[in-house]
Length: 69
Image (cartoon, rainbow, N blue to C red; front, side, top):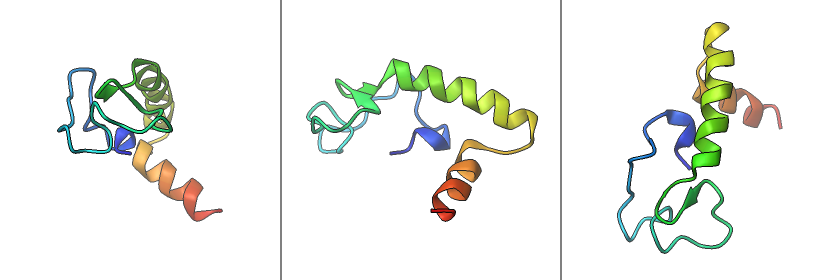
């Protein structure tokens, strides 16, 4: 839902009509109360640093994982 691209930060607020916004469905775990979920941001940052050390972005890794399924 966009976290892998790095375009969302703790201060990002999606619009109200966005599925990630304040009225997001209960299954939406990556965004909470209309903002990126801090727990997920923390996990993404930890993984991002590991991947960067190998020269891979989060989005590239996600594409590889999804493509392998």
